[in-house]
Each structure stands twice: as C-alpha cells, then as structure tokens.
Length: 582
Image 1 (tube, rainbow, N blue to C red):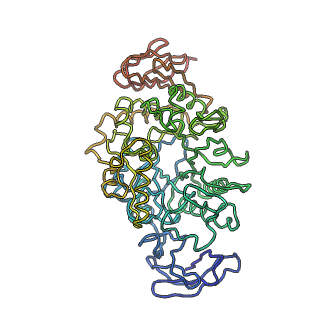
Image 2: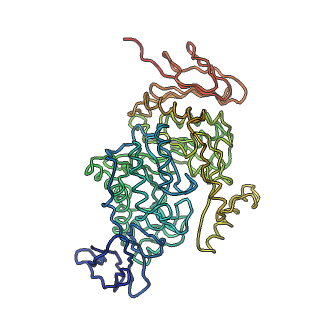
Image 3: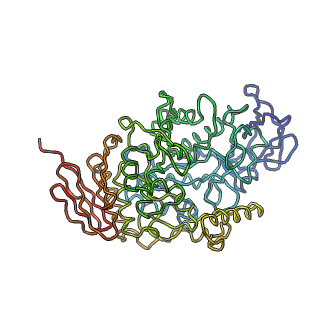
C-alpha cells in the first residue's frame, strides 16, 4: 500500500512500520510530500520520523488505537459490509437530535448508543447529530479538544464502531450528522506543527495561534481539513457535518475556506447521488454564511440560531446576565423578532458586545429550514456552572411550551439528548486530561470564571473528577415512551412532519405578542403556536384570520373560538389553519 505524508521542511522522512523502517522518497509531483510503498495488513502500527526524530502519528491516520500521540494503525474502511442501503436524507424537513456518545449511555460507546436508536426513530427524529468523535487525549471529554481530525476516538469504538453505528442508524431510517472542529486543535497532543506550517501567528484565537488558512503553506492546510470533512461524509456515509465556531476560522483569502469546503461537499453530493449538507455554528449573524457561493456567500446549507435560543430562554427563565441582557428587556418581542426575521441582532446595537452586530437576512429569499432552532444544546447546558437543564430552570410546564415553539416553529428543530422526556440529569463540563498541569489549569480556570459570576469555588464541579462525567450520563427510564412528556414531543414532531412546508420562507412567518399579558402567537405557514407564559393568569390571544383546528394542546386548553384562543397559565396550543372552501 502507499504511505504518504506532507512534511515540507524535513530533509529526511522515515516510515516506521511495526518493527521495520524504510526511507521515504520525495513525491516528484507534489512539493513537500513524501511517499513509500510497503505491505501492511489492517491493524499494522505505523508512523513517521522526521530527520531521525521520534516516531510521530500520521496526521491523516484513520485509526489511533493507542491514543493520538502514539503510532496509528492501518484500517480498511472500504471493507465494511454495509447492511442497509442509504439514499441519504437532506436538511429540509429534518428533526435533529444532538447526542454525546460518551454520556448518551453509561457505557459511552457507539455500540451502546446504537441500542437506543429505535427510541429516536419512534419519536420521529430524522437525524442524529453526534458531538465530535475525533481522537483526543484521555478517555472522557466533550470532544472539542480533538487533535486528529481524520481519526475516530478509540474509547468510543474507533472507526469500526462509527461504521456500525451509522449502519444501525440507517437501519432505523435515521441520518447521521457529525460535529467537526476545524478552528483549533488541542490544547495537548497536537503534533501537527512538527510536520509543517499548520498554524500561523498571523492571527490569534482564544486557543493561541490560528489554524493556517491564509499564510504561506495554507493550500495544503486547507486541503487537510477539507479532505477530512469529505472523507467522513464519503467513507462513513454521513449525511452532514456541523462546523464548530466558524467565526474563529481566521481567513483573509479571497475565497474563504468555508466556500472551498461547501464546493467540495456539493461535488461529493453530486458524485454519490446523496443529499449532503453543512451546518455552521457562527455568532456573526452574517447572511454570507448560508448565501450561495455565486452570490459571494460561503454556500453552507444551514446554521445554528443562538438568537432564537437566547430569546426563548429569557422568556422562559427570566435570566438577564451576559448575552441574555439584550433579549431580556422585552423577551417576547425579541422572540417575535427572531422567529420572523431569523436574527435578533441584524445590524442594531448589542449591549453585550458594546457595538452594532449582525446584518439582516433577506426574508423573501431565506428558507426557514436553513436556521436551526433549539431550547437546549450541549453549549447552553454544559457551559452553565452546574450544567442544569431547562426543566430544572423553568419547570415542566414551560418546557412543554418550549417544545411546541421549537418543534412547530419555522426553523429546523433540534433536541438535546434526554430533552424529550424531561431528563433531570445535569450535563456538566468534564475532561480527562492526562497532563496534570493542564488538568489543574482547566480546574482553576473553570472555578475562576464562575467565581466572577458569584459562584463559590466549592460549588463548581471539578472537570477532572470522574464523578462529573458520571453525573452527566443519561439515566434512561425503563420505558421512555410511557412518559407523557415523550408523547408530547412525539405528537409535535408528527404534526411538523405532516403539515410544515419544507419550502417555508421567513416571509411566510408572522408573530404577534403581548408582553404585559405574556402571550405569543407564532404562525409558520399553516401552523400556529399560541403560547401563554404567565405563571398565574389565563390569556386570550388572537390567532391570524381563518378557520383553525387545535391539533395539540397542553393542560387541556379549550378549543379555539371565533377569533380567539384561550390559554391557561403556562400552556400552549398548536393550531392548523384550514384553507377556505373553493
């Protein structure tokens, strides 16, 4: 087989294959590349030594069985015998479910997670969105400290485990989306700088030197990350990728790396005949993120909408610190603005940032499914001091209202694991850094960060304590489907599937509200969600003109009357507008 590595500054490169070694030759067709032919069966350990230095893992290793700093192992992904053919599932009409492999079950493996996929299919989920699974030091962690973007974390089950998980998901009719991190690596175990200019001091990020996307040598660095993304989509038959914190991708080139990536993914979709998509996490509120490449956009297919989360969260909880401050002044007005315009911050002043922020989306041109809406995510739970979930903060009744607004609202909905039955387990920040100095720095930094917000140090969970990860594992009920909250989510998803147009535009969304009376009426095409967030007072809200039928209600809301809908405290009703008779 052919072994290749990019090491542009090396004078000699040696391939170490089990107990053998051989010199590699410069590739005459590619500057900085080295190559060698050698016989190697799957499982064979290998690595590269630069200028007679230590043996390093292959930057493009697909399997790192002994951790990201040890030699890789040869693996033949094409040998997997797929049991279930898969035509693919696109983003329009999707209902996403974010899960962390290491805490979705106590076992924390792909195989254990696969045993729960039937539960998600019965709920009506269309796509499982896996948090990052690339290799990182230690056993347990969130996955955002990965250092090997081509490999799969061995404690989860490695590449074979991911293949089995995706195959099992396809057997249940579920697509799979993978969260990937291109904006930083580390902070420990990153050996890429020893191979070449993978990082640059031209830009700086919260994690130090930036990934080199625009300095000398950046052509190969961009190819490295684009290639890893395409390889995951192709070799594991994934349906999409969620791109972490794309605002941290510092890139001054005329063609942004995101546009290069989206072009490569669109080409792969055409080649395979499967719909493929990219969803960005971005705090820029920049329409270019999802604008077509031919219109000078990045061509991504969707993006997370934190503005929707923040508006909904403040309306449900009353929290007003930090980035919630801008939304808390008039939370229902903020929620109405965000659901109809896409962004709350679309050019106006942000007190949290101390400046104007964002640009408006084109309501006529923007398809609502390009924005992902949610009441909870790993970030919004896990970056709280105690990792408390929405049910603990707002109560079950308000959580049920939130589910109606998310699942029957205009945006592509996403649930966080356990949300569908009101899981009470926290989801906390946990790490397993083998480096004791780094472990202590993370521990101290976490406590210092929250001490600034009034928390006592002893209240902050120790990220390195195994008990922190254990507390974050889902405690599955014997029969989740027996819980009324699970059935509420199932019914809402079915309503969405049956009635929400996949071509809904932002211009097709309207919202009315009364801040003092605490009600909101959100209409997305034929579906209307009427919600009353008052803890004590009933509300009467006017739905849009037309004849309506109540499809689902919380707490026995009375049926809608002529030009009104009556709502008990902390309740919601989902209404279907009937077309007028011909």
